[in-house]
Each structure stands twice: as structure tokens, then as C-alpha cells.
Image (cartoon, rainbow, N blue to C red):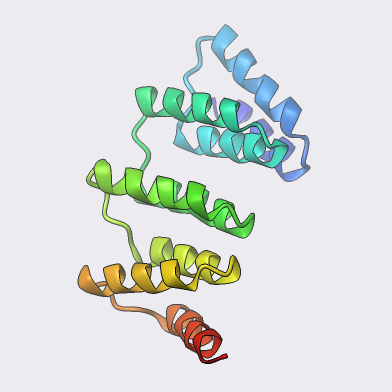
Length: 155
């Protein structure tokens, strides 16, 4: 398992996503069940290929076989925000809440920053309010994002 996961990770980092995805079939043939980290690499690879239907299918498959944690979902949220796919990131955020996973400072910072960068300052403000309401104390990075947000509002 570790060898296949390492190979998928290396292929993903080399932007050889189609080959990384093909490793999933090899894992299935060998009756090896991917872990959360492997699914995460595969999902990120599919997103970079623009294969939304395949991402949804693989994500559902992951949810049926493994339970992603806050860190895993936050990593996916961060990747989506970097690609300015805020709606998809918000969908994952809502999934976290539905699964009784508590978003943390990393989750909120990624979403707030991604929203600001995508010109969705209202969404960023809403997320900041939710974060504060959940008694999550903003860190320096989040304060910088909020400062940027307030500067954008003044213009």
C-alpha cells in the first residue's frame, strides 16, 4: 500500500495525473483499498484535469470506504481555493459540518482567503463571522486576510 501511495504522490507532484489515476485501477486489481491520503492525491489530480464528474465519483467512493478528517478536507478546500473554485470549496465546508467535523482555523483561513481572492468579499465576511461565532480565534494570517478584506471594502 505504502509503495502505491508513494508512487501516486510522486506522479501527482510531477503533474502526471492520468498515470496517478491509473494506479487506482492497479490497486483495485490487487484488492488494495486506498487510504484517505491516496484518495486526496487522486482527487486533486482529477480536479487539475478538470474531470468534475470523476472527482464526484471518486469522492463518493472515498466517503463509502473511508472517513475523511478535518485535515484531509481542509487540504482539498485549500487546493480548490487556490484554483478559485470557491463554490466547490464551500460545498466541502458544508460537507464537513454535515459530518459533524468542526472546521478549524486552517479551514476558515483557506476559505476566507480564497473568497477574497475571487472577489467574493461578502462570502469572506460571512465566513469570518461564522469562525468568530464558533469561538475560533483568528491567527496572524487570518488577521492579514481580514485587513485586506477591509481595505477592499474601503475602495
